[in-house]
View 1 (cartoon, rainbow, N blue to C red):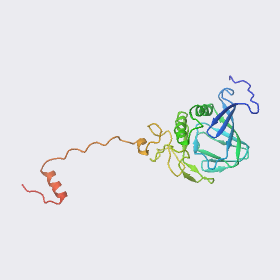
View 2: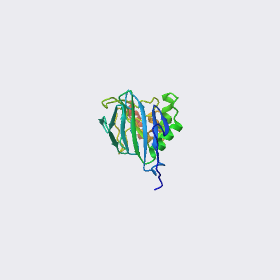
View 3: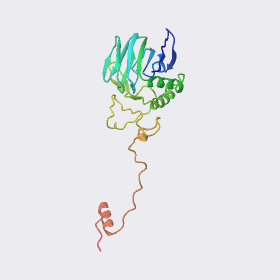
View 4: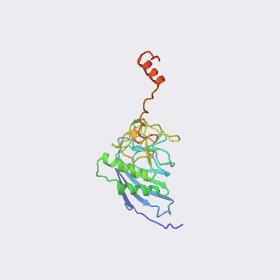
Length: 237
């Protein structure tokens, strides 16, 4: 084990501006030998929860200040202390007060790499329709996916993801892939590049251009059948 004692004082730590939230690294993977990471998150009030996030790492969220509602696998929680969410479980949250301060513990080093990639590739001064495709590309690189759409305070689906221009597929979910929401949304499941292309363009079952119809057959029997379809009596001789 190569980790060393690390001290990060109040107000110290690497600051990561991720969309509307501020993530401050209090303990990075380099300080824990890749075992876990600790982030202090400052989040503003949200009128509706963010899209369901499904990340490949386990995390524990500890509420320091403010009000927070967390929705995990169809249930809502208002943690007075902490909540632990396993890897691969869709979850979302909403800040119910003017702001909230959260302490997030994430397993491994993948969360820090994902946040750093978001800061590097997703600008904060662009309109949402330009930010959305960049965000999805970053998420794809880190095996993070967004499921479902916006949900109301009671957890009821209200529509597609809140980012305009978000790519969507309306095809049926593949086996083993469960989605919770009103309008089906897939991430990282289409063989083509993720963009705002029509849903039919990213269907994995697409068979390509249709084959041309074969030339009409000739011969007496085929002529008689064609005449019968038109209502003509079959020809004799």
